[in-house]
Image (cartoon, rainbow, N blue to C red; front, top):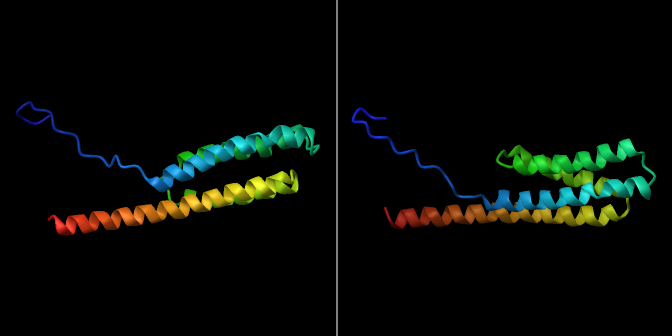
Length: 134
């Protein structure tokens, strides 16, 4: 509070959402569901032991969800690409994951690329606006 007894206004915060982060988080959340559902498939069809299937399937699904929440950090996008490689590698156990992993890898790369492009163009548009309206 100030000396006059008035409360100070809070500092303005950046409430603008990152399109890149939103799109990439959506891909990771959907991928978590898909990878999580590979667990029973690994157990029943691929004859993977229960412990290994739970560790790999559910573990990778949890990593996807945690990573979706960590996308404010730039390193998380590189980790997202590592998750895509791991999803593709599941194809050696469940051949259909080559297809599904490829689809999610394409979605991830597209979300990352388009999100970066949108953020660049938005920043350029704001810079032009501020230059015209000082």
